[in-house]
Length: 506
Image 1 (cartoon, rainbow, N blue to C red):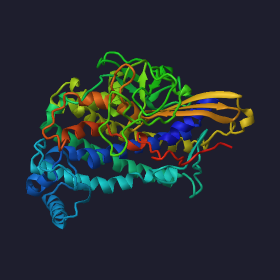
Image 2 (image 1 turned 90 degrees about the vertical axis):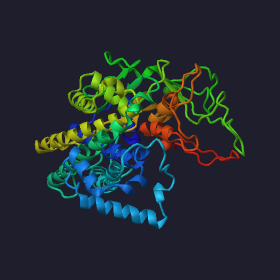
Image 3 (image 1 turned 120 degrees about the horizontal axis):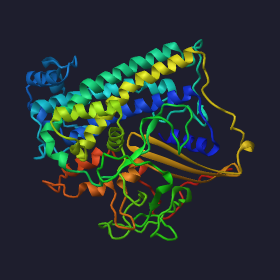
Image 4 (image 1 turned 60 degrees about the vertical axis):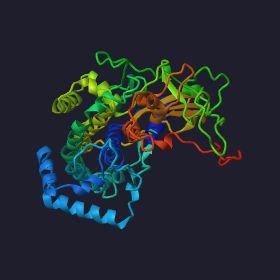
């Protein structure tokens, strides 16, 4: 996701437009990333906040099959299948080597699912492991590998397109992509979303917990037209916009120039830490003033985080699937409205429940279904475009630095699965003068700013009941509903102040 954001930043700075094939391939790569990432987030990170693995040992496999068949026609939902999963689980527990399940709060009073629902969820947890490994092969076809795809290129993509070559994107590889996307859509429609709908009624009190800010930001994603700039992105499949104070009657426009970052409570240094900086003027200078060994409690009245505090027009914002679905819903997106309304109707609740931990979890599942539907359409569009004889995949006219302006600035935007991602680049004399990134977990996980406003994580936890402070399952439910990315929000310094690495531009 950082790859496409970085190339968009340079393309914006230099005024580069990419060919239709490159736009479609980027959409497809990003779309299947959404589908895979959201699904494995639910099953392999978030689901166990709601599902008690140990309880599944007491389930009746026949009753589990009946439950599964009542919510979906997924073909594996037989009593024999669930009995086999339960036997595998019993053997796993008996071995004493619990692996990823060793630290669970099993038996916690906040768990409410009956044993049969727990067994169904465990079975789908295991299925999702195999499923995600298959569908993400689309990245190997279009990007060379997963993760960290190798084919993003300023001006387009580097994967060859040639109907007559087995070493390039051709009719056979496109047909294989469609097979993967059919498999992806079937699983999210018949397993993932039904599981969310099956779990939610047992936890409806979480429709009133975990909201936080009430302000939501989405840059928008998946361009549908070929003439795109960062400020005027054209038609986007998922629209750009801002929701303020829970008000779904108005979608506000986005102006990236209104974004600025504070470091008042962050371990970074500005000349004037009471004032924020726009990323084009950003400075990332570590200034660790936190606890020293033996690491006593943080003083949150001072600096207490390695994350800066980004704000939009002075306001703290939430980003991610909930923000995207709220902006799309309020903008009248046909498929989003259909699926949101369908989910709300099945649960017998109104749109107000979206502003919550449960709403955040449901929004991620809804978005997964919506994007899975669209993947096949983009693949068909790509096939038709190639079939018409258009084999262009990149634009290289701007690759000669001697043609660049002496100074250029660009903004690269995208909606990563976790939310709004922005890269800002300042190019001077053909070299990078400054580069800053504001990532989704920076928006959501930010500390307080100079005005005392908390970020989304902090605000969402206010008022959360915790049954056992030594086993804070309830806190995990809300934090995991954001899908935090620690790689984007953790920094490492040598404790003795030694420089670990320095990158120099020749």
